[in-house]
Length: 400
Image (cartoon, rainbow, N blue to C red):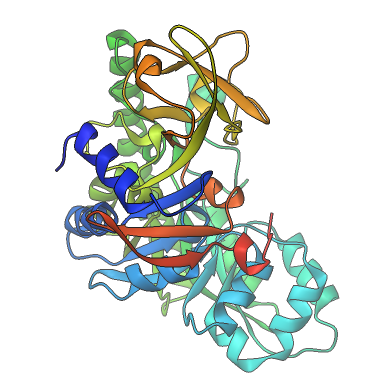
């Protein structure tokens, strides 16, 4: 791995012919992160979470590597677009209410064979049937299990509010409801433990909180491993030909893959390694996706102002959702201004070495959301841009 200073010099050289703002993906880091995900998956296939990549060329690149298979998508419109583009195994990981999308899915044999939709409520099946528009193709269905940890008799809940289906018997009941309904076929089970996979457990300067997170995650993993295995057994009793059981995420790939009931793991953020994935004991990734903003003002000693930069990430609002001024090291936000819509002041001694027109490199807090701010990603190998790939937005696709 290069030092941060060497990376900064390399990125500056590679993009010297381009105007900032701009975004890059370091392909050496991207490929190394992909290899690490495969290693941690221990022989089980990794399904790529497209929301964390949002670039068709990079989805194709990673799926061409051994150890990766299939896409986990985030909207039905995206799923259909990817299937029409040649992606043959697309799991839509979130329920949809897209009437045009379901009409297209139900009327096209190729799309129906390539796309699997997720449900956790019989009402979602009724909605799909209302939106079929006369299409009679069988819809592939994945059932989602709630993974949250319940403590104190359920009075305390840890984990995302996703599926309402928590108990193995209830998931088997949902499987029976799907199989009893003409035009649907259960092919998979999904259980995403975001409170384990998406929460760092080695927070700098916060040893007590880090220890508490590790205790919570250990309890959550143990409880879920038992419940997930029971749920899969219960569903297999209804659907012996179940094709896949999906679980995990970037932060839990190794531990989730070790469960016998799980047949594949999902990951996407681990390819770009945004700042929210810096603090895990389970892995160390290489930052691969960055964006550069040009210095446009020097308001005083120890201060520069860059153009734009106010690209907050989704989730509960907080400082951890802001991009990180990354290179040169040592810059920080002005607490009274933060990351601005059209300009961002940055403080710190490195500011005095920056000239008008120089670049400050940032890391986004989350992975694929960076691509909603740029229409292309410049792909860097060594100290050269070897290709430029459009993001979803660059292809005119704004799915959310």
